[in-house]
Amino acid sequence: MKQSLTIVVEWENAIADQSRALQMLSCIGRELRELGPEHFSGVEIISGYDPTGIRLEVIEGMLRQGLGVIPWIDIRNIPLPGRDYYQMKNECALESHGEIVLLLDSDVIPSPGSLKKLTEAFEDSEVQICASAVHLANGSLLEKTLALIWAFELPSAEIGIKKIGSFFVNCVAYRRGVLLKFPFPSSGGTARASCAAHVRELRAAGIPMHRRMDAHVEHPAPKGFYEFVERALARGRDKVLASRKPFWKNVVLEIKRGLGMITKRHKLVGIRSYQLPSVLVLSSAWWLLLMAGGIATFIAPKQMRKRLQL
Image (cartoon, rainbow, N blue to C red; front, top):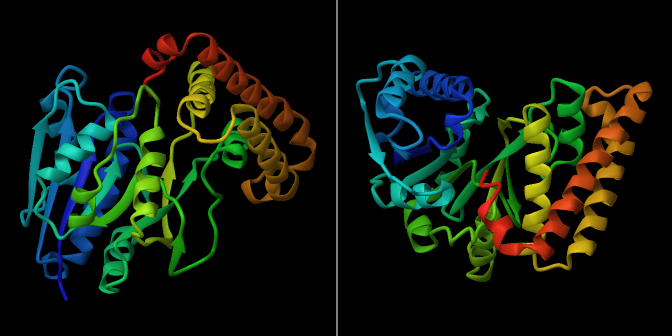
């Protein structure tokens, strides 16, 4: 049975890297043309943007260049001044008409076939939410190191749909009614803690969550020294402000998981044994910065809430 689809794109991440936004649009456009209008009962793309951060003409240019001309889809660009990442998703969802709403970040790159796999998951009436399998880009040694110690999983050869207990909202599809009933709560001055709170609400309400294991999506790694530092400090802050576990327990668990991944799975991301000392130096720098971010948050929580809005 054909269903209608809304793809929601927020342009916050594209402000920093338009090249990835173009790649994302190219992937989506190619797959929509391959599927054709007969695959859906209707398709719309709703993009939310803050006009103080990115101009409409820039967005329209990227849509033309990356997506191309697809006459059977409707595209709407909605100005949302002053809204953050989650507020954009919420407000765009309210404007949606699709039975399935796909939230897609502007800096992730879906693998071929991901759109078809995610939407076809909803042929099963039990599926209310279906997330993609997100992994970190892993080209350089720093990226490979972060791929091991980041929150995302490594790419796997698993296929099909799997029931899960949590997910990330950078590429996830919902039945529209579920998303409208459970909008994203306030981020409370954190980077992405609203996602964790959203998942907790869904879990408490008994909403089943699934992942399409072979719908792979690549998320960018931090670029350069400054972003590396910024991301690590923000992660430490969020572990103080948003986690229900004690900060130091969180740190110990993160380091333990990271060391396990480095020891057992470094070959899966192309790290050779002679590179392990460098990997340990990079990961130790990340964990020390994470701890520094947490300590700074204990000392000056108001200031840390205002900073590092990634």
